[in-house]
Image (tube, rainbow, N blue to C red; front, top):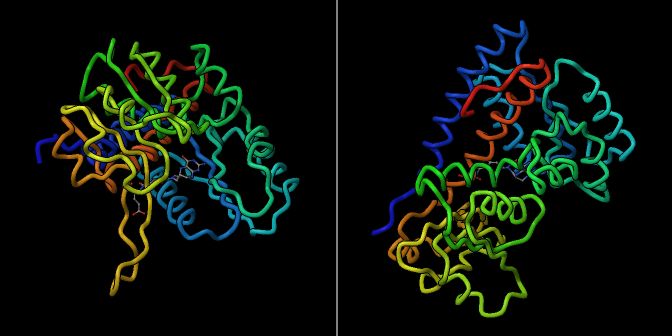
Length: 297
Ligand SMILES: Nc1nc2c(c(=O)[nH]1)N[C@@H](CN(C=O)c1ccc(C(=O)N[C@@H](CCC(=O)O)C(=O)O)cc1)CN2
């Protein structure tokens, strides 16, 4: 392997520890702990695991966790009424509705009901707008986590060519905006991009967020490029396996021989999502108390 492995698990552990220390200081100053409310609708097994992990991580970081589990047939009105109740609850600094929502529940309508000051997922249109125009707000956890790892690895990103593959509202678009804010030259590529391998070959930084297992091949990469793999795809189980292997959007085994640095899957971007969520929750808590969040958090 020639590439340096970007260890998201270790990076996330450091961030969680730092958040935990600042959260203890916050609790002393404010006379209360920062609080995160997580809402899960239905029984999707993967979502259940993520919600449990978030609850445990919140408590381990010296914050209060409020978990709300609703049945899969919950109506939009009931769900929005819960969100409004959490908006009004002074013990709750951050609200997260676990996605995807089951059935016909309208994710946009539910997210729109969250108080933007408690939108620690950064999915509200106000948060998206603030990011776009450079105003203070919440940035979605996954792209912010990617950005932290990129800055740690590369320092100043000015003038670098970055290609983001994927244009989702929660990863691709905010990721591109963050790279632009860091003075990179940014291309957003997608399913209709002509000659995608050629576009990717120009990139010093590649962020793959398409949700297609091992789509990005080693010969698409510029030698030495930094590759951030946001994809988490479960393959069908091979014979004798109970569960399929987890792979990213990048053909890791081959790509690591060409890239300068690369995130693995699992253990790359995924763990950063929860660590940044804790960070955003603590920042929300500081703002709710009218206090300046700690420098560098
Ligand atoms: N409201 C939200 N919903 C969802 C989000 C989100 O940020 N906000 N993101 C994903 C799920 N997610 C957190 O909610 C999440 C996904 C993956 C990981 C992670 O650490 N993955 C591990 C592998 C885990 C495994 O073995 O299955 C890794 O990549 O190493 C954390 C959080 C969708 N919904």
